[in-house]
Image (cartoon, rainbow, N blue to C red; front, side, top):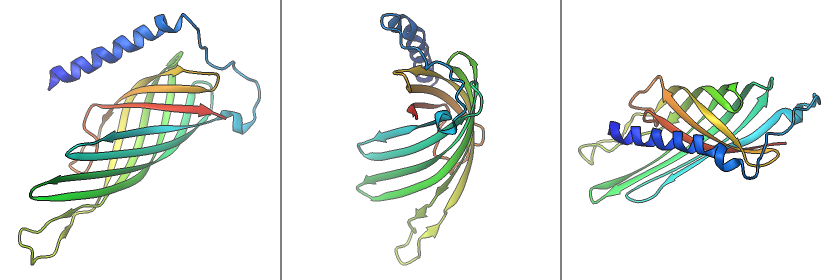
Length: 191
């Protein structure tokens, strides 16, 4: 399993390093710094989508908004909805989880940033009873996840960008939906 994570990390590093060489053909630069102090010009919208289909169906939708406090420091919040369905000949489980997040990013060099996020997520869960005549056990729980890591933002237009992040959950519990390390690819656009 460690070998798998190493291969993914090497692959991501190669993509990040080669993006500059590929991008040199038609240089897409970040938007010019503006002296305009209009609040709407400092807001970005974006998010993450994730899905897996097969024996296990997993869908995640996470819209977010961020505010550029300074050119290097951004803070924001988001919403998260996750749907999980598993079925086999012995039964099935369907769960929906929801929550929010608050995060901060600091750009340490150009488009390379560090990321800190607090992401509480409500995980309703019902365990089937060992005897059908017994009631289901409610094991609903709030997962209090603290994610830390870094990433890279690649501009794909004047106000649009893509971000790639590698995060680590510092508070991993059985109720947490995240398995370390966490890889995220997202898109965003400024107003």
